[in-house]
Length: 95
Image: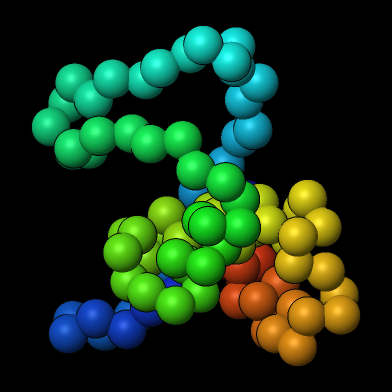
């Protein structure tokens, strides 16, 4: 579970959601059908990490999922200067 709190004009908004890893065939090609996503692109983990770290190209909650995955797969390890803060920020206590 990933949980976070963000400030909005109305006050604080708390969110929690579950993220799952799926093993898919190499030839799997998702297609956007609901209008929420324009397209899908296969990217290397390092490129995705760079985008999350240096831009706002991904929606904020999508970036949180990427950061969680990078941490769980050791691509962001305890030696990273922000590891502790990221871990706390992704897993806030939920009342």
